[in-house]
Length: 145
View 1 (cartoon, rainbow, N blue to C red):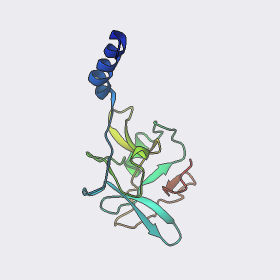
View 2 (view 1 turned 180 degrees about the horizontal axis):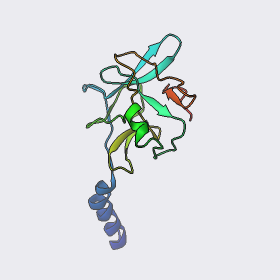
View 3 (view 1 turned 135 degrees about the vertical axis):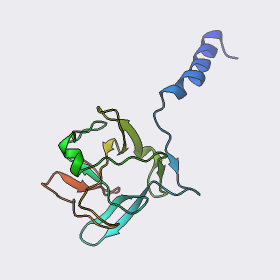
């Protein structure tokens, strides 16, 4: 049914492909999601972590690469979740993880790194939204950087 070359290719992918997978994003069936979608008057829908703390994206970032380094990270710390679980209203493939140039891992949404804002003190705070017209909450329905 399969020739020898096809079998070698199949065996190669079965054994080697898992090594190259960086992160498995699970759907939140019975697990608590790492990310949730919240809604706030004046802001609309936005992503928050499992505790309700708002997540932001930086307009100067590019897909898969953070432009926020050193001093920037003191105000805009990276969002990281050891086990990344997407909520039911987010497509799991929209979530992922990158390894930053500083070696730290960071959660991404549709390829773009996610951050906290240090001046947000409690769940639902969105004080970083529109900061310097380069920091924004992430509306999962309309996100298009």
